[in-house]
Length: 448
Image 1 (cartoon, rainbow, N blue to C red):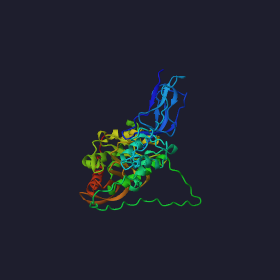
Image 2: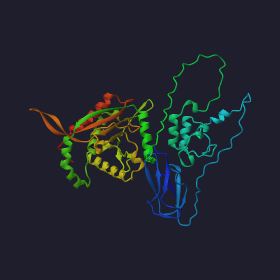
Image 3: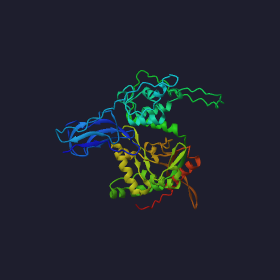
Image 4: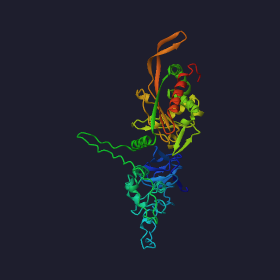
């Protein structure tokens, strides 16, 4: 058979690279089409890459721990005993650096050489020989990080390699002092000095954490580190405000109790409260589309599609947010099937990277753990998130034509956190109140 190249597949619009976690097959192993051959990890989710054809794995082109760009060849499949027609990729040799030229005063232009932006050179390696991925070099180029500064960044990757997380963390603490100084040019004439800028706020130093006798130190796993970084980034990016509304969901509870057995017999799966709540959220987003936006510096991006992320807890205790794409195009049965499918595959670690990207609004069910309300953190780059509290039986005043009475009602709190840069209290408060209105107005005689 002819040789078949195994490419790192496209894994969503925002995913440009992946790290090889583990090879599931070794060179010489027989492989069937669609059989998983490698485990990879992105900054969003772990997944497996299937073989595109039957054959024998005759060459692995990357090692475990390597960072690979989308579209690169990672392995070769062929017939047993075939010779590999593609050699393993190697880092390109760094071009020889010419001797520094001299200016008119005989001063070597060393500064010009030092401030060459990483990524403009053809080589993928720095002067030290350390490899830099195209993504890291592009970030360095965009942010104006010179090669000598890039070389000084501590890397957490294999063999000290600088990862995307490393360079983004460095940018958050970077100050003017870390930037290579430019050549000083003395003014030819006296100029009026510009207004003195306010001094930059000092970087926040992490306090030393004492370890006492008997304490146990547990290293965060990769997913927990990503979650921690994302949460800190979100709070740093968006000024959070939270509004609360209590909703009477008695009609929904009674309706679900009435139809749940019929639904399971007909559809082969259970109907939970989550798709009903998502249906109300989608309706409210249509009423208040400025909730369904993102912020890019001083620009507001209004999203056309309504893609609802639903936070799901994993058995490991970590959190993942699968996304129901174009939720406004689905009826209640369709929402139920999507919710059940995504939740099940999230628990089994079978989600694809594209299934946890592209969300425009997120909902998290804190009531699952018996919590009455919460203050959820916005899932960037969205601008709002809704927490669903536990449904509880509560005594309540019931208005009737014959006067007020006291009755037992099923109630819950909705906690709506939003980005105060673009969502003011009026919009944030009206939105969550509209969600509550749709829940309270639910038709208890509704047909499936």
